Length: 491
Image 1 (cartoon, helix red, strand yellow):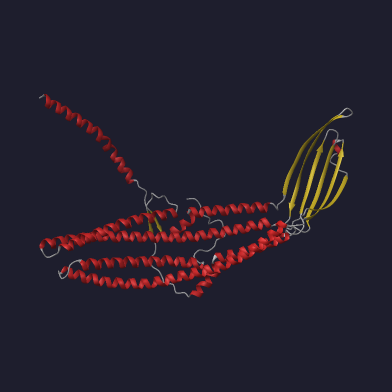
Image 2 (cartoon, rainbow, N blue to C red; image 1 turned 30 degrees about the horizontal axis):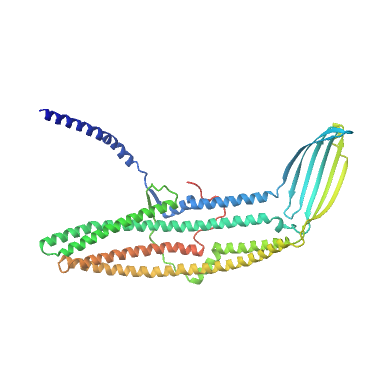
């Protein structure tokens, strides 16, 4: 009895521990299910919506837009140098002499400013009023100056060198941003159709599982009934395992394609995404010479190459002018006055005229001559770069057009293969149903039909994406927009 009582107490203790362990799990289980139900809804996008979102929120494009804004700031800073400048002037001078004959101290206050402006031809003018106050008198004055370079530094090309160089950099950044947009569109199109292909394979393999399981079940029944072979069951089981493996791979590839697309669109990786894109297409019929002419007229590389040559020639001209001596003419006029009475210090009565001709030039000109030689090399380098860009564009157009023509032939071949594989599959299925053959021919025909459908789907999607590549190669995929309204922004 005592042992039974001990067993009952032990069982009661064990049940108490079990309840205490299970109760929190049961209590928290509805909360877990509630959290699972609150998963974010999938983001549904069409191809056009995906492209527009990529052009607006893509992180790489936003980074390129920041570079463009930085170049715009530098250009505005260079232009502001030619606006009216105001420079305030203030000083306090203290002096003292300590000797046996004279011991005095003096404090001079000076307040004023200078208004100046530099013109694009190199001429600079300035007006500087000032007021001075010391211990004994009050003084006032106004100075006018005109400085003009006579040889080096005179003219728009030299004076506006920084402005023109930064303007060229801004235009280059704008073309670079547009090229990044084109690449982003191509990557988005490729990612969308890659995801569609992966989802197609997932659905294809998933739809094959129930018929294969039924076929395996039929093969086992036929084997038990003595009208089938055991090899039929093994073949069906191997085919079933192969489809399951392909389904797992397709699901993994679909998840990777979805993550790649979400990264391009700046979407959270934990949010599901569903895309829809047109699968219809029209065949491209264009001659190579016509496509090359269109590409040479619209590609940004040609525009950039010509702009680089123009900029290199301008820099060569500036470098040639810098070999001239630095000779400057400065004309000045000052009207000033000094009075011990405060009421009269604003009436200057003294005129001072000045004329100076200055020059600071190293007659050897080693540095300037080297810069001129390098500028001429830069011109030749820019011309070679333009020729290389032309040849590269021609090769790119030819390659993409040949790829489209080859895809067109493969698509026709895949459709013929599907037609033949469908007939073979139907014949093998009839023979297997009437026990005139085993399932080897049936499984082989189904495998060939499946592969032909996958190949046709892949070739058609490749043809669609290559059409976008062909438009990009001709420079007609995306129009160049120089306004800042369509700049990428943060989501």
